[in-house]
Length: 82
Image 1: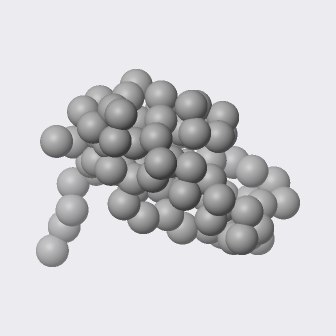
Image 2: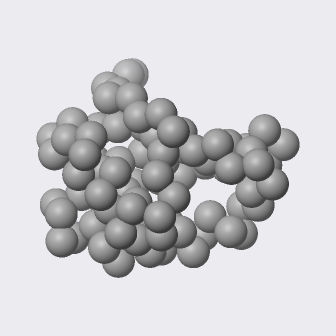
Image 3: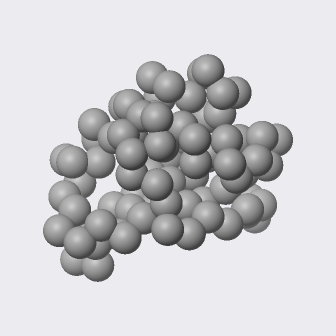
């Protein structure tokens, strides 16, 4: 299954705000065969990054849309390095 890294531009974001959004993703992801694995927050730059295994880009986006409405601005297919 492909792995994706997405990026959200959310000015003023706080790490504690992202906890709830990630928990919502986890509640919804099973319906779509998706696994939101990790997330990172850069409060200073207003960025959130999510690492997800998903069948395709649209399905990864669908989980965010249904879970909390915060769709990514950028989504890259990535491969893990050593």
